[in-house]
Length: 470
Image 1 (spheres, rainbow, N blue to C red):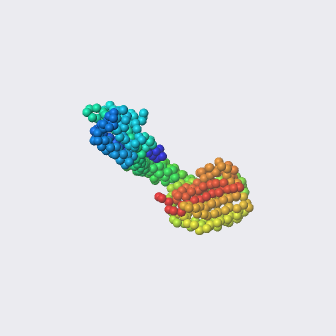
Image 2: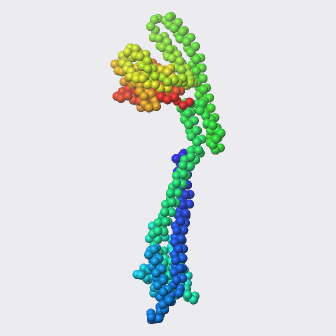
Image 3: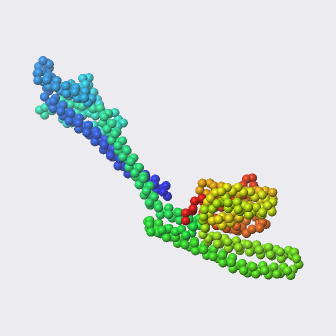
């Protein structure tokens, strides 16, 4: 859910920042250009004031007065100095396009273009329009023209043709500052979005964790309903009600299994006793009575296993730091005579390693796993038991060279009362591994199964090396 909500927030925030940043960038560019245009307007007004008192040349240059020549010379010096200092071409041109004064000396009015358009507009007794906006990637020039008016008539036009390199650099610098601000704001917004989505989805994460706890057997887990939006509070209440109902149903199931097993044991014991007495009245070696006795003992074993399973699912694990290697070596030694009597070699590799486990529970689980391995391993083969540590867990791996299981059977092994159809003639109730799995799960342990090549089964008992979280 967070992977859907977070990109949506980021896209929305990026759109907002873009909507603010683009007009700001345009405004910065316009302000920089307007500043340059205002400076050029002031410059053209100053040159127009100087050119206002320079008269046009008469038919004979000898008639030009000395005062007029001085004014023209002053204007020419101003324009030349202006060009040398700022690199801006400037000139004062009569209506006939004849230059009154200009700098550089080789610059004249072109026949067409922005300079000519600005000149023609100024001849109409008004300043030329502001130039079009120049962007950093353009190499345009800024042209400003102002009329020189004397006695109400336009006698000449002042034209400035400015390079835009410095202005474009300032615009680009301003854009870079805006871009850096946008990036910083975006990073800040992403951080805020991460915190916001974390805060918004916190009740969902709590609900997810509690659901996982229920699924893994920690039925006491519940969700607080005091925080979050109303919809999540209702969901939390519904979840708690569901968890209470599930726990009640399972508790009733366990109680029924335990009570039924316990209540059936006494009548079954009395029945087995009467069968035993009846056997004395029949000829020795009677097959029917022997079969009845065998089935009765098997039924008694099933009832004992059911009672153990009900207790295992309800018992709290007594976790402590346990030497897994020593405990496993003890169980291997205990099963060695049974394996030897069957003609199976039981081999143990049990280096010292510690983990958090209930010693009684782990012993029972190892007994069930080793018993199965020895039971299904043919005579002359071997069963190997190996202890190892792998990061956060310690493992006991039991491998045999028996017939093994198919993929379909491997998916069902450990289910209650399940036994492979190929092994129905072998003694067992089908509850041993279920009991072991329930006992291990109470302490954070697991029981897993895999193929052992070329034949056989590999069973792994895993227990945590650090104390499980309650």
